[in-house]
Length: 400
Ligand code: SF4
Ligand code: SF4
Ligand code: FES
Image (cartoon, rainbow, N blue to C red; front, side, top):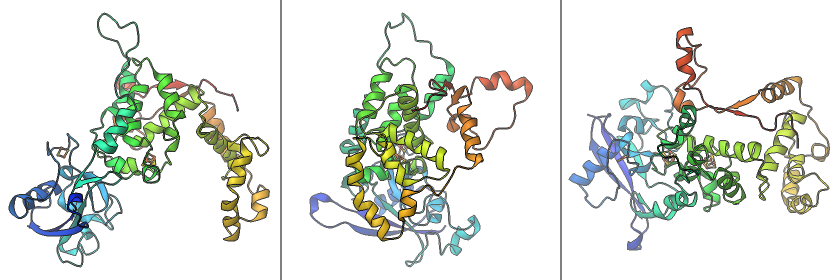
């Protein structure tokens, strides 16, 4: 059986001591989980290691940690897989599987200390209670409570059950798969900058009710999530939450759905300028093919001469001056329009805007990462039941 070195981050805020790395070597089969290894060390060597766990089956969400820099479930991560992971680089091993196996694993997880090294740290963006245990109440659960995480039933309440169209339930199934492990919260870049951001898990939970036709408060929920400056427009599309999630919830995708329904369907113009900024971005690409940054700020605020734009333009002058000084921008580029959108860009816009309805893809449910094979004629009717719902473009052809 291979040797693994577990490098566990130890910290007890009560002690007044600084955090430190605690190394333990353990012999275990590569199919064992990181949690198995931690529990073995805890049972045989040091019972004081703090780790939270319950089901050990990837269901309860309590064993969230960072393993070689990436958040995930300790009980759901094999030792051999963790050892292949280069620190901080996500799930993909460096090089092929053969390279990353066994003694040849010099690049991927083995290191200066000899055996295959697996670092285990507490999740980020949440305060540490002790060692690998973070305070989920202080951050994660507080944000979940913020989005009213229960159904606000539509009146009149039917005598028996509500009848919900199958495709609507398929639509919210992806967000319902969340096990509240906090892995997405741990790696959210927006939360690092703005700890008040509602965050990926809470906003995925919000979509679960916004997308449910039994909920009476869809508009109020969307207005609230748009108007809050730490709401849906605070996400920077970094994709970290998608990469971190062990259940394929795709939190960023749920946030984008909230934005589409709030902005395009419900026409909610938030005071944070999020919707106008998105709209200005699209129009900028339509016109220039590539993003012309100099126009983006003024257009997001209604145009260069709009009273809303003036303070924003004045505020951005130091950034512009720095960009000019470093050669990232030239006066010609700022004032002119060096790009013109080629016909291909126009064709893409025409095709997307020419559709009668918007299709929300739900890869988690359909199970296809690439285009699915054409259905057999006999299976077509059955397959149709699993298709994602179509949303009519309420403003098709309308421009702002
Ligand atoms: S995509 Fe948005 S919500 Fe997800 S981690 Fe990045 S900033 Fe956070
Ligand atoms: S969305 Fe995924 S990563 Fe985030 S809390 Fe839910 S299961 Fe965990
Ligand atoms: S112990 Fe329950 S998900 Fe890991």
